[in-house]
Image (cartoon, rainbow, N blue to C red; front, side, top):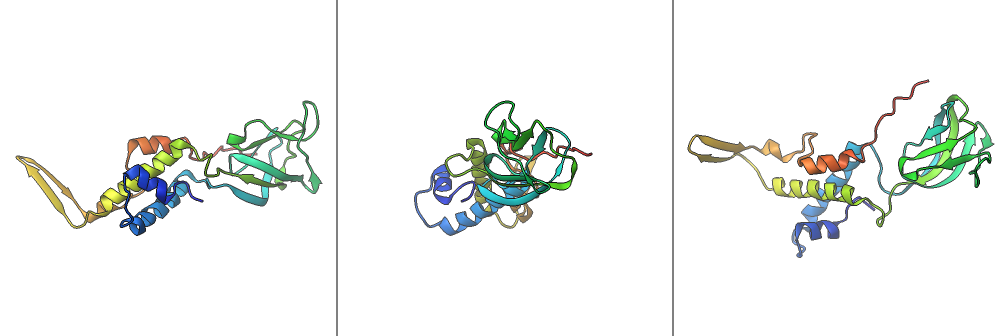
Length: 196
């Protein structure tokens, strides 16, 4: 599964035929890859096995991937930490799965690589955020619209002139549409800068 699929992209672009499918699939694959790299995240639902984390000595443990779908196992050193089912019980709990934070009122024992978590995180096709999909559609549409441009084109009207070179076909690490940029900024992973 990807952030956006070919059938949905074609609907967004208003395309009903199949003559562009191969080219659209290339733009689609590049878009899905670009969005993941730009946001520093994997959006598709994925199982992460025995990921190691440094114990923070605090109540919060930020998982690398989110939203949390399910936590299968949490170990501190070699001791299992279970999910608590009621207030005041020992164990971890998830207050907001969208941010991928496990809380433990007993604190996460401070140490390097001493917490091991096996969990599933990400979105399935039905829960992929609409804003994220819209940003991906706009980027793929930009690739399609600029992908047909080659060579140098010129346009002039009086003293005004405009040229477009082949180099404009790439994203050059810039998101082409301000709306797409704003939409993606909501999903971009932030470095929390926690140092102990």
